[in-house]
Length: 162
Image (cartoon, rainbow, N blue to C red; front, side, top):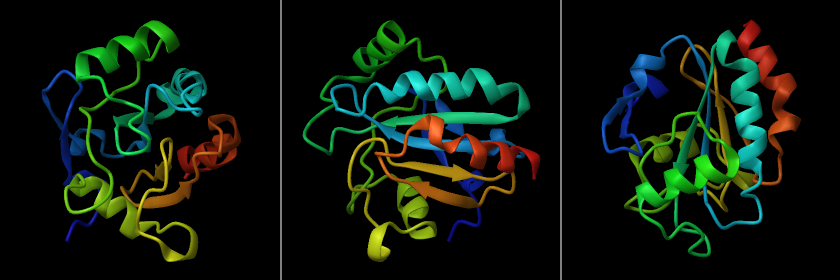
């Protein structure tokens, strides 16, 4: 069983290995994203958080998923282009993954077990569910899709100061 977020790797949206261990000592905000969701405008707020806090050690990591309403049907190149052109996304984006079920990416299985949702649910209910991970690689808090990036600033600042 994984001890921290640093025990995982993924593929970047460009298809290259991305070892989360390279982010050791940083605060991570991990988000499952979608390009055609009512919450998609949160990309703007996430990019703003990235620009504001990255020099203090925040890394935002987006994981596109097509699980909810088929709201991210494009391939990785199309998703990357959409995020860049429409929202100026410059924070790290990973290759599209599943976040629930037997085919869920191991990181997402770990995140949801470390910070269960409402009534102890270990599934992700919708796009733009977010997990704040401290400098020690442990999950601090899970946020619902309706929690805006702006609403997380105090928790992010506390994590960065810890």
